[in-house]
Length: 364
Image 1: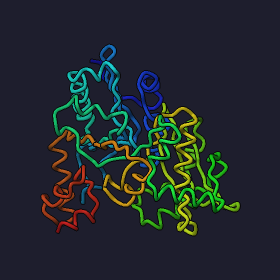
Image 2 (image 1 turned 180 degrees about the vertical axis):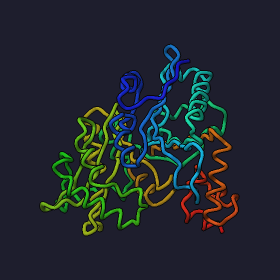
Image 3 (image 1 turned 30 degrees about the vertical axis):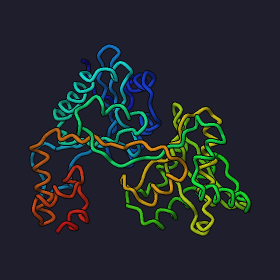
């Protein structure tokens, strides 16, 4: 088995994607953008043995600022997936070989440890990775709730019938009131989108990590393909907007929101159904809406389930590649919070040493 950790400019990255079914989240330009936003280094792991291939992108982060005193030894790192669903990709031959899949993940863990990486957290792709857990021992992946997708292979009547009656009523109401949905160039509507997105994040009191900045959205707008912006307008004003990613028959609802003054009209219902019809007309198979916040069964998931009964399990892969370094960072995190180390480990957060202080304190 040949293994390598790739940088963005390595031609093997693009070559692997040409050979493997993948999503927008696996593309080097997206991984690079997310890495810059998070102050991390973008890389990917590739394992090959003949026709058997495993590929996964990741962000390499230094574990600095996590302990109360500076460390005098070599720096320690950890690995995390970019935002979205950029999980493991396997070739057809690899999907028939548990031996290869397990060996490749073992090689991933071992080579990360050699790079002084103490832990790795990967977000699996709910659609492309749904059969991968069968190749591994039970419990190897951690359940993380469910996500919703609209089946675009249905005919128009069946697609509409799959929508909850209350959602249907809202969509019809928006249309009667004169709301219109369409796709527009993101670059030309960048300021409007950012206003609506910021308004939405403020309204729902989103975590800081959801507040993407102007440079992030500008770079998305300048990507050569696969990025689309859907809007709902009423009397010349934009009431709702969403960025969609399109890749390999999959469309992802990436980020979006509704202007507060239009909230009572629920124009986002119209926008998502319009996006499904648009994506269907372009030959795509699924519009993936995602799940609840943090994988929870919350109001957001309930809203999304109103568009489709089709659910996919979301899982994460959590690796402790250097147990000693992982434990040391967890102990230092506990010391900084002035709590027992068991309290930090008991948050359920992974890696435990990056648990937000509010999670640690809530168990006190």
